Length: 327
Image (cartoon, rainbow, N blue to C red):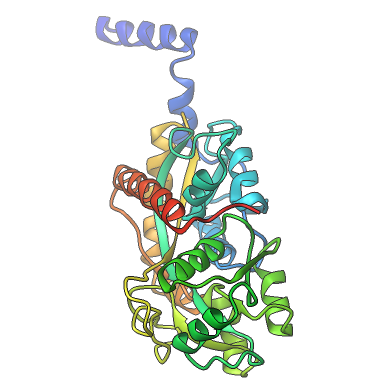
């Protein structure tokens, strides 16, 4: 053995003795077992469907099964808390949306920090919600709905997928900008909220497009406006809420992935690379569009992190200005 090789060997032995090589080796071999993605929403919702599309494709590219673990409740805070307290080894990830920061503003005492307890990976997509009404409500447009609500303050109910959800806050923002008052009815997930909306138990909702598009097409629900600043590819005939008369209204659901803090950078970068490659696939983009979501991602985890900090500030202000409260 040459002197140079001897020095390298002794350095490696010392590193092993200190446990310094384990994280790198683990990251290089990652993943060696199934990866869990916590989706803090109920199955079948606007966030759950794209998550399952991604999980299926990532299982192929990573060579290990990617399992969706739905942990709905309390405005996504139940699932986020589980993820924050999970080992930072890359085997538990968290699917996040705007709700991650909406809840931070609504719930004053969270058992985790929505920014500092997580490492950003990347955004994966964004999707508008849609303002829909049950046909029994005599509102054919956004202006009609506003007029009805002004004539009957608090008499019209609007459903959401839960306190602190995007549907909740999108409704609060609508009321704030339109100068009206409706009664918020929180459900435990998108599916039960949509079920009661279709049945006419509640009159108004702001669900994800994919959830209600079939029912809009059959006339069981009436779409009045999409929540984004531009029209949706999924229903181009429906105006934006801003176009329909509520100036300045723009609320889009974004979707992304994060990991518990202290997850090795090598793992974060591998996941980022695999996610971006997956999102670039035409078939994945097509599947996303079918679910009402458009693919979007950042070049680096750091850019996503900067975006998240801006979102935290933005939604805290929206919560404050709208007067939204957890019931």
